[in-house]
Amino acid sequence: MPHRLNIHIFALRYYSIMGKIALITGATAGFGEATAILFAEKGYHLIITGRRLERLSSIRKQIEKKYGVRVMSLNFDVRNLSQTRKQLSSIPPQWRKIDVLVNNAGLASGISPIQEGDFEDWDRMIDTNIKGLLYVTRLIAPMMIKNKTGHIINIASIAGKEVYANGNVYCATKFAVNALTKAMRIDMLPYGIKATSICPGMAETEFSIVRYHGDKEKAKAVYKGFQPLKADDIANAVYYAVSQPAHVNISEIVILPTAQANAGTVLRAVNKKR
Ligand code: NDP
Ligand code: 8X3
Image 1 (cartoon, rainbow, N blue to C red):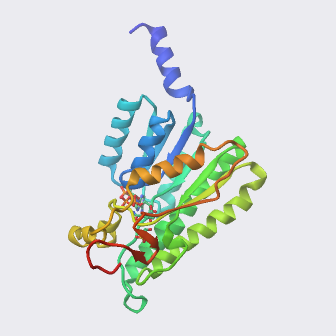
Image 2 (image 1 turned 60 degrees about the vertical axis):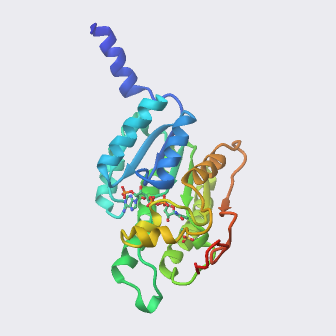
Image 3 (image 1 turned 90 degrees about the horizontal axis):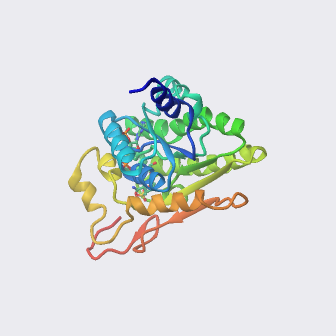
C-alpha cells in the first residue's frame, strides 16, 4: 500500500470521528443491544460496554459491517470502580465528544418478600443499578461538560415509579435511578446537558432469566398470556428522547405493554398472578 494512503487511513482511523457518538452500557443483550443497533442505523458511532467479551466483540463486528459506523467496545463490570475507571479513561481523545450516554446496564436478581431476601442478590442489584450507573456517569459527565453538550439517558423502570409484591429492592434501585435522573437535570442545567429517565414496563429480554438465576422456564412464564414489550420498543423511546430539538428535554418516558395497566396489574389470557 502506498505510504501516503497508509497515513491517510491512519488519520481517518485515529483522528477523525465525524458525526455523533453514543456510549451505551450493557449493550450485549436486550435494550442495550437494540439501542446500539438503532443508533448505528441512524448514523451514530458507538462505544458499547458489557461483561461478556465474546458477545461484545461479535455485536461490534456485526454493527460495523452492516451500518458502516465506527464501534469501540469496552469490556468491564460497572460494579468494579477500578475496572470502570480504567476502561473509561482509555477512551481516546477523538472519541471523547460523547453526545449521548445511555446508562442501561442493570438487572433484577431474585424476587422474594423482604424478610426472605438474599443478601447477595441485594448487593448485586444495588451495586449494578445504582453504584454502577453513578460510576459511569461520574466519569463521563465531565467530558460532556467540557464539550458543553450531551444527553444522559437512564434506563429506570415502571418499578421505579410503583412498588410491586416481592419487587422491594429492585424497585428501590429503580426509584433511585429516577431520583438520580432528577438530580442530574439540576446539576447539569448550567452546562446545557439533558437528562431523561426511560421507565419501561414488562419487556421480554434476558431480564427475567437473570432475575430467576438462569431458570428459563420460570422466566418464560413471566410473559405468559400477554404481549410484553420488545427491546426495539425501548430503543425507539430512547431515540425519540435524543432526537428532539436542542430546546426540548423529554424528562421521562413511561412505556408499558398495552396489557399492563401499572406495575402490578397485567391482563393475561391465562390465569396467573404477576
Ligand atoms: P438484559 O439482561 O437483556 O440486558 C442487561 C444488560 O446489562 C446486558 O448487556 C448485561 O451485559 C448488562 N449488565 C448487567 N450487569 C452488568 C454489570 N455488572 N456490568 C456491566 N454490564 C452489566 O436486560 P434488559 O435489556 O431487559 O435490561 C436493561 C435495563 O433495563 C436494566 O437496567 C433493567 O433493569 C431495565 N429494565 C428492564 C425491563 C424489562 O422488563 N426487561 C423493564 C424496565 C427496565 P453483560 O451480562 O454482558 O455484562
Ligand atoms: C423491569 C420491569 O416490572 O418486570 O424493570 O420489574 S418489571
